Image (tube, rainbow, N blue to C red; front, top):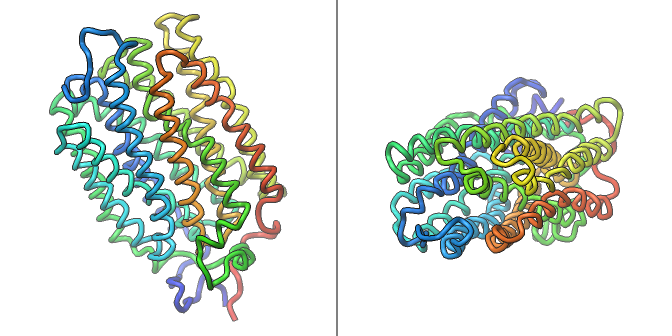
Length: 451
């Protein structure tokens, strides 16, 4: 009897649909919506940055130019870093919680926390208040990727996981398309408080959809690949202790630690970059941001599909994943030229947008594949925990990089973009040294036979 027609005692599986039912794409759609809302919530603070100049407690000096706003820049980067630190700590908790509670319950808890926290920003009136709100938001949002990657593992075969991850992860880009249009309109018309209330309420609506969806009743069964990976984690002993002894965990964490900060930089500082370098205000920031994230959406899906195409053409999991990651790493290299675009082309921001579009697309293609590597190394019972550890590493290094960016933003922008250019190649080299062979044997990821 196949797993697609069996009930698994104690496993939470009660599948009654074909192994490749189109229902898996409904799940992918829900993951996409959750990720979109997740990134809209976290991007609000950066998008309303010009409106924050009028809050006295943030310290903007109207008698100085943009290059001499040390107090504001310090407060701004500190508030952003609070989110990232909490996000990293939350990953360590959320990953294990999702593995323990299951995807449906764990995801529901996470989005309930981050939606309430997002709306809570509207109640604060001090730097400390914003820091507390960002900490709560970070703790809640840390549950998104561990839950989403676990859901992909439970619903998709091996050669489709990077594509599914690329699709739901493109929600980060969809957020960056919608938010630069929606948030300024809401802010200009109703004030900055309304911006947080708008995105937070979207999370509550998604939570209702998620709770209504019969996730555990319809999800797919275990697969042969997952069965082969099962011995990696023993049923007894500390799960954290076991995964921390695996080289794959550290390879994933280092790769996330080197590359996640670059996406944080794009997310938090691109609106500021275009505002200060090209004099674009709230009404005109939307177009360059939308163009960049449109390209990043394409990169997310194409990069995710690239590894699957290579596997389906006869290459191994190792070859498929790493080839796609190498292509993305090389495409990211030209972003080092961004600081020179203003000097070469004046107020024409199109050349900078072109380089940043390539870089953003490369990052998202890379992300779709690096997020899939835990599913190639660990059974689904440990995937969220490993993703949580990697996410924590990425958030911690992201917080450090955010503070670093705040310190050198005005004086050494080239250094920031140089690091953004080289991070992916460096991460791939380290990953290859630590995990020279990725994935289970290359037989098809088919349902296992249950005695």
